[in-house]
Image (cartoon, rainbow, N blue to C red; front, side, top):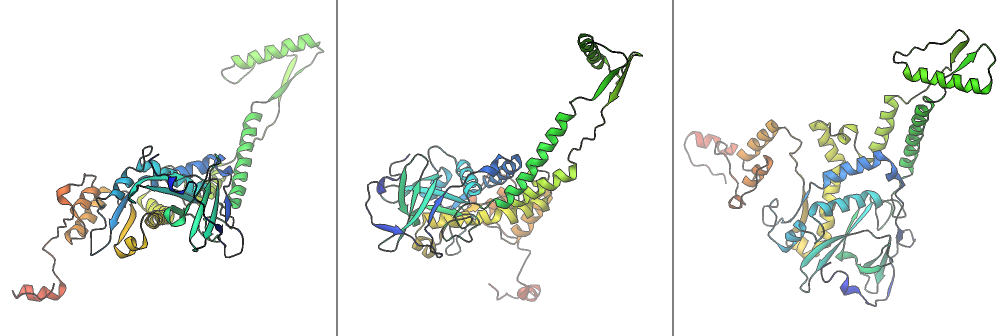
Length: 402
């Protein structure tokens, strides 16, 4: 890794105490097992969500003095967002963050900096234990311990921490212990497992003994074995499903009533699992309509997109840089990807005619590469005027509107 990663805190001796939670318990959190990910439905659901998140484009923007916040800054921070570290692309970084969100309900990213404080890299972390500490100045630190046994303590405001389903715990996402509360989902997965086992047993039983051949005369063991072998050969040779038997034998089939789970039951259980992740089978199989994807984005993805931007902004910028100078990190989704081409044309026409879209934004809508010479340029139609000035323009007088 780049020089400076955790170097500054090595051998640092600081007297600290546990940061107190509101309920009085100690803020020490241990990672939770991932039993639910043994389910293929769960893994497919999480994979679908994470694959959608990897389409996000993180951008350093400034929302200051009406600056175009949709155009990334040409900054060191933007360069790192585009190339997080020597081992990962931006998509890799978001993928690691996304899986961590659903595995542990918490995502950690450590920003490395050079001697001048400039950002040099972003590294996702997977701590096995997390402890929150407070020093004599009342500043919050976080101690991260990893499976290798390595332990590090860093100021909490110097690290990126995204909390998923942040509710009852004061410091971490998840339940009171800072872990995913998956009890209800596990019950559904047990039901799904029972159904799968019943289907498996039903299929196995269909290949079991199907009947008995009764001989009207007494036969010894050797003759009986030969008769059984002859019967099996007849079964193998029969292409029409009929067998010829001698007058001295009868075949009596065993009645079977094998119950295999019907399609409605399978769909009910799958949908019940998928609802835990805010999706349905249409989204999972990529057989969705525009309305279905729009609903999926708004209910499942949008709050993660907004939360990641806020977490990165808090971890990368000081309060002055963020609040005083308008610096922030946003994760730009392709909002119009689920629109048809005719809908894209109509949206670009309505917004573009009124000067609400930058030229490069219009190019991105149709999949064209932004052009440097079009940065910051907006065009608008002159066929629209302020309604207050309409009468003045009709009679040829100069309008007073802005």
